[in-house]
Image (cartoon, rainbow, N blue to C red; front, side, top):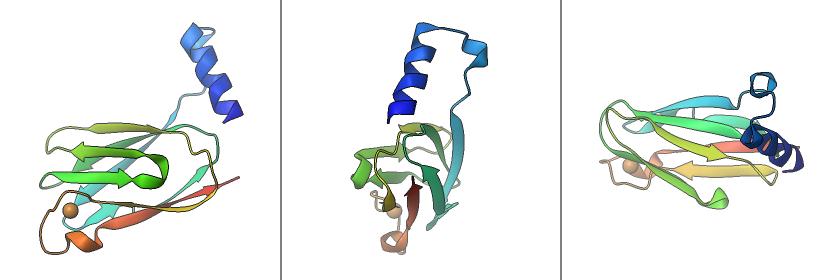
Length: 113
Ligand SMILES: [Cu+2]
């Protein structure tokens, strides 16, 4: 969290904006009934932006352990910022019923120190 807060603070103040490392963007494509990728590894305290898109119908993205969720609307990009503040392996899942197979639509994010 410390490093993330520092970076964010500097970026907010506009200090040497060009020299700031850009936040890592991770694209996740949802489709019946999978996410691709469905396994990610992140570093604790390092912010990332998840760019969520769907290849077919409306999907959800829910990660209760980090209190984030989004609708993934066809034709749009849903952006979710995440700063993992704890280590472990955490599940994400589709929380909008999308058909037979919806129940198995999930993945994990592993956060390492
Ligand atoms: Cu679903």
